[in-house]
Length: 467
Ligand SMILES: Nc1ncnc2c1ncn2[C@@H]1O[C@H](COP(=O)(O)OP(=O)(O)OP(=O)(O)O)[C@@H](O)[C@H]1O
Ligand SMILES: [Mg+2]
Image (cartoon, rainbow, N blue to C red):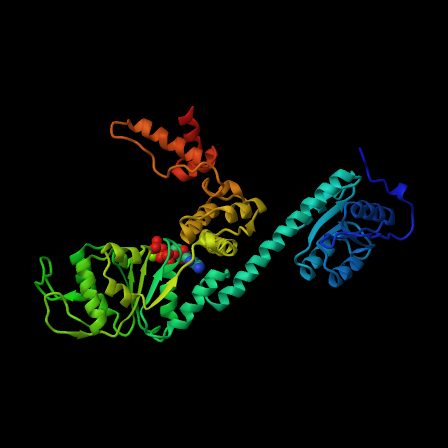
């Protein structure tokens, strides 16, 4: 066993020679009132390529913490004037980003445990071996680095949210945001295009909020959700008896959005007949309720959105060219998440905070493996998919960091499993149940606890059923 033996290192004041260390070497402060032990630790840590500072008691150590940027403090517990426990408490205030490891002698284990409760990362017991010391130190520094990284991500996010509440710093996102800001105050019609889940609705709301119509309502109509007649009734309203079921009269969404904004979502799904009617309204600025003959003036700002390729629909004759040009006065194309890699971690942190709040959790960040997996994935479902992955991760995580084990299998680059099970009619309930259990287990790499939570059953039920 390679034990640190203070007697072998000679006496005198501890000095730590620092020859050609890498510029990013972590800084460790060793605080011990035994000069020999202090020197031995300094020597060991310097040899392991750390920048080492030393202090002979807690007060001196605290002074150093005030002056220097220290990543890790390695401190003895019992020292004259200020002991390790007091140094820990005061140090956490003056240097909140610094980690602490406690050195304990015989009979001070209980205090060491108290120190860990107070926030120290770990403790090492005298006499300690070089390998234990190096291992504990490198783990504590890794934790310190991760905390610092995640903290800086959170700070960046907070700074960002003060500016506006759409998260994104990447070039493509900045360009879309800039256009949105510029055109928000005009009354020009805007067409938002982009894949599903890229944030078209988020943008529509933001443009409305930034516009001079912000104190009026933004009314959303999904052109995909309703069959033709109902969509027209919804948009333009109707007079009594105008169609079967029209028992009274009703104001349409155009009228409701008067002086405000009308958000026509999934506009590519609108039938050709309704397109003609919409075009007329846009050209003339007046609407007529179904079954009515009184023109009603409407001062409405239109924002339309679609994830279809309207240009090719125009070529195929399924979308009217004249309507297309009316809507596409200003086009804002929302970038896919895979084209804005820089934003992935920022958005992930944003959703982590928001689902922490919703679930009463305090997970503070991501392990390096989880960060790499999130950044390496192509996100075909864009921001919505990322948000769902984060919600799931927060709910499933038992640790204070999101690790790969709570990320969906697809994100980890594992075999892409089908979301749907192929269970034909004729399958017994028992077999169907087994297939679902098996598929769920596969999707979480065989983790029975997690599978049970997803299925909403007790883990022991899974154990029993797969036996
Ligand atoms: N930049 C962003 N910042 C924060 N949250 C975002 C951002 N972009 C999208 N989201 C979130 O992602 C989800 C999907 O966004 P949204 O509904 O706006 O997408 P969409 O483009 O309208 O998708 P679809 O075409 O499927 O309707 C929402 O929960 C939204 O809050
Ligand atoms: Mg949408």
